[in-house]
Length: 435
Image (cartoon, rainbow, N blue to C red):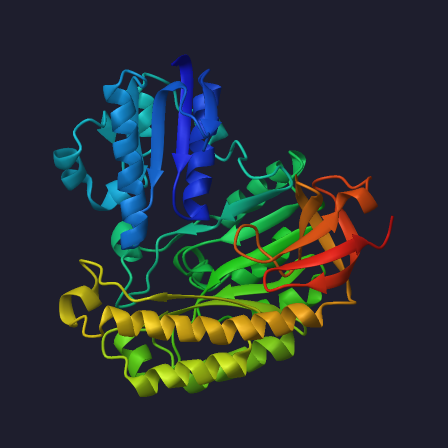
């Protein structure tokens, strides 16, 4: 057990990661040594930033807490603190059921952990972070919360109403990160396209993205978690006109059948969704769309599901994830609908949908063979340099593998033109074309 060392574990989404990075920086300013997601816990203090979104995530968070409680019982850990979405949502239950934790903090009061330790919060460094990703890219969170009320989603229960960060604050953070060597920015929010409505009484996402793109040193800017209803089309003009905005958009659509969309409280129709996709592809040629879809929402019929399959075949999403509905307490679905679709039916539908998408993804991957694309190198792994194109976000999308023996002078964090030699279902294989 190392004195004045903190082991920090982050579970869940990139928005959680940003919170962790800010608290880690504050701990370091107070003289602590901090390890993030270390394989072995060696510090006297551990902090778990939890996820409470769906059942699997909650289970992972609880298992991690229990594992650390066991270390504490064995005398290998002095203090254990828990923060984040799970403790925001289930604070009293956790305090009653796992009292071995020294203190629980919610999603928005994590800076009080410093008070618990008798340390200072450096307000003038509130934007500062200890980047835990590879140093050339970072996530930038532009807002908290969500004003949408999708029937199945617990996030508004956890995070509360949408709160935009002032544009000036975001731009200053990007400038500070550029000064630290960050070149690629993943812009994140629970609902990206809602940005500005609370502060400025109008959607300002297009203006914000344009201003970030104009900051010297921003090489790539990628957009995550858009919403289809009342999508601000002016954003597409900015994406087309600015060369450093990646031709990539993460927009969760969830379904296409009108009865299911209505039951989900998505406030959008099938025709509007088809039209939006056509408009996005028309206004931003070559764009890669990532979406998330759900099967098995209460009331989904075989006909509804077939419409979803047909939609995926039509849309040919470059990137797609899907999951089966699971009932969440406190949500509209959980309180007002019967979870009436058998688990085996949900899993069968999920498997079929993903098989359809796998064929589409394979075709898209193969279509890139012979092309010359720009990639950023993220890391060295075995015999390969591993990078990504502008169409690929870290952790979730395909990667580009470049043989080290054939390209010995490549540097991690730098950008290169590569020619794609071959493809499989998940990765592209390439050689450097410009060195």
